[in-house]
Image 1 (tube, rainbow, N blue to C red):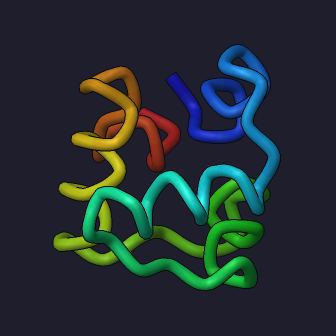
Image 2 (cartoon, one colour):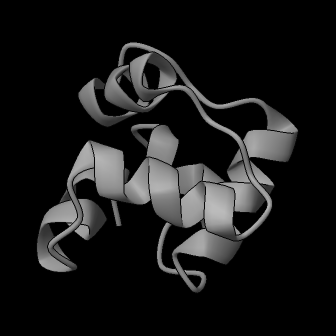
Length: 67
C-alpha cells in the first residue's frame, strides 16, 4: 500500500503522522514525508523500516517502487 493511501485510509494528516512517528521514536521532517507521498523521493533503508513499523506493516519498501 502506498504511504499516501495509508495516511488517507487511517485519517492521518502529514502533521499527525509526524507526531505519531515522534511519539514512537522516529524523526521525519514534514518536507521528507511530503516527497515520499508524492513519489519524488524514496525513504532510506532505516526510514523504510520505521515507516513499515509505524504503519503496522501495511506500507513496505516495495510500495515505494513501481514494480
